[in-house]
Image (cartoon, rainbow, N blue to C red; front, side, top):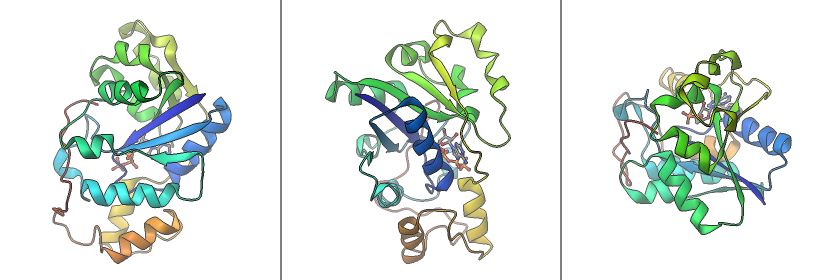
Length: 215
Ligand code: ATP
């Protein structure tokens, strides 16, 4: 089976993530997509992550509900410490070694791949799917060729460009604006019910926040 890991902060998960996962699954004929909330990409300050790991996990769980090919994994949430993607991938692969593994990431993140831990080893473990995202041209991946032995394991996929970001959603919430339809219905419900992202202060919920220098 062809399986993809979709890692992200998911603070919160939004329709841009859902459309990307669905379309990559279709393009590559994947059987499953496993969402792995937890990691903080290198360009993000740990302090910029607003919701607790448990709240972010619950939101991803609500988002994937109803799609039998989508699931969420607690590996990074339960680790309680920063995890690099190369480590996460190895753990998930060990559980299901017969599968062929992919890793989905936005082209914006992939263009930063040289800052991730052991990018060439990661590319030995998985095919890196670089999904298009508004504002990030795939040509911005060209510079990676010189720095990576396994550059040919990066596979760009053109997805419908959905101009939604978690930052934009948090900003709207701070401004008291509606985010309905920007996130899946169940995620919207959790955000309102738990009053996530309302204050400027970080929440200090259960599960804590993961700090990570590189993915
Ligand atoms: P933030 O605005 O806080 O940077 P984000 O919206 O980028 O957050 P992440 O959880 O950091 O959300 O994203 C996880 C992965 O999904 C990343 O690889 C990112 O590039 C990708 N991604 C996020 N939003 C989109 C989108 N609208 N279209 C395509 N890919 C996306």
